[in-house]
Length: 196
Length: 198
Image (tube, rainbow over all chains, first blue to last red):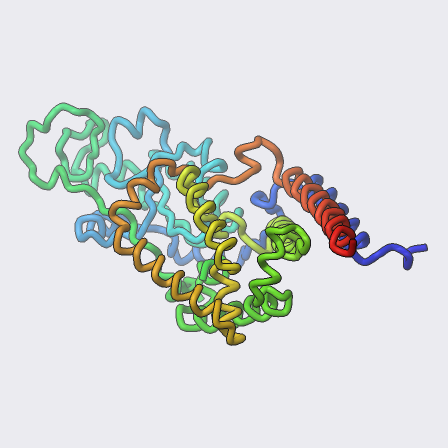
């Protein structure tokens, strides 16, 4: 009986079965089978190789060799008030729907370091290869780079306080208009696992 | 190279070229074996008495699509890293028509003309010269073409997003479409073969 069916029909039936199972399989983008190397995670955490100093980041932005895709996890209002130049706003609630790529070098920051750490873990658990956190988060950036004490807001025109108002800067700091260049493409050939 | 393997840096630029050459040779070999190194075979598609081109192309689409779905689902392959050509709707319709007209006139598409060149077909060599000339003209006038192309830029467009259907359902529908097309193609081939005999 089975032998009488032509090869074409068998192949067609096989394709339909694969397609049918495909409907039930769910989204291929949300793979649950991704392997998580917890040992590697532990090494990263212990060595703090997933942490970036605000001053280092500021230096690389000024020198124009920032390779990070900088993600601001705070809410839209906070982001609109002030942010790191060249950063993108992806509130932590939206991070699952973001267009972040798994091979990108991602740097996370927020006011809350706890929130940043949880977002880091979330991305790592989804197999994002290189995710980093800004040490001390937004507060440290304000203090160490912008030189603003806690509670104060940044003056427009400050070096990295990218205030989202249109009024011209009253402080004549020429560097205030510096825009961070877009993140450089990650050199794929040289990516090495850190900590080994 | 646009495979995720390369993007994750599992191998470097030099090795990726070797892989590209191997994949290219494989691609060319199977095109030739499918009979696509002959313009008469390819032109037959447009007279509907030999639908091999349709069958081969649709089979390739279905195989790759089902493979990507399952590999993505199993976590072997990261679909977000698979390069998807951006959609420029109007420009791609115009481009497709130009390519189609060239295909009908010359009897080859760009890939098959290279395959046919390798087996020494003279018409393919002339065709390939035309391809290179076209590339040259396009490159020289790119400053004019590019703004036109950008007019209908839509970015990365995928059927599941446009249709608001799940990924698996789209795969299933395309499989059904392919089988429908194959059945229709066989039917048309049979009718035309009967007419020829008469």
